[in-house]
Length: 246
Ligand code: MF3
Ligand code: CO
Image (cartoon, rainbow, N blue to C red; front, side, top):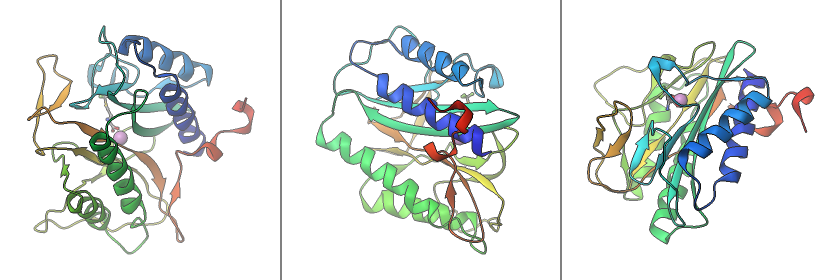
């Protein structure tokens, strides 16, 4: 898992660094494909349930699973990039929302709160706690700051396949029991947060998920490892195999 996650992180860093006003989402996706290939990896999303792109690029009120096309990103937009790669038989999965050359304070607050909620969730990922403890930490941080948790899409176990058990929701349903966390589990924790209402709708393209009210949405994701000590963020630069370092 470590090399796959190191590669996923490197691709996410490469892609978010190249985003500039005037690029089309197709150009960004093509660049992502080239970076994935350069590391000897493959997209874990291309072809998954027939998904047609290499990475997921979701702009402004697009929540997740945006489809690359002729749309040009502009100064002040926010762009969510979700990168899943298959490398040496394992999947690394991470996502981040960035502004295009900066954004207004309200959008920046959404990005900051969503990213911080991810870290609040990760800090609960220790043996003896439950998946719901991760979910609760994320939900509390987001709602305390006046934003909304998306319910229809959740985090997940990740390993040889991109989506494995257990589901890792970003909200708590107190009526449901929740799996115990154990050392050795690898989880993709990924809050999706709307500035307005929590609801979503899907476009006729069958993929693009939008906020129901047109408000902005942000998405941050890491693949993490539960250990007997502190959780380890696998999607970090230190996991890049030395043979692939520039
Ligand atoms: N956003 C999802 C995740 O991080 C994966 C997208 S699957 C795809 O788990 F097919 F849409 F790419
Ligand atoms: Co994921």
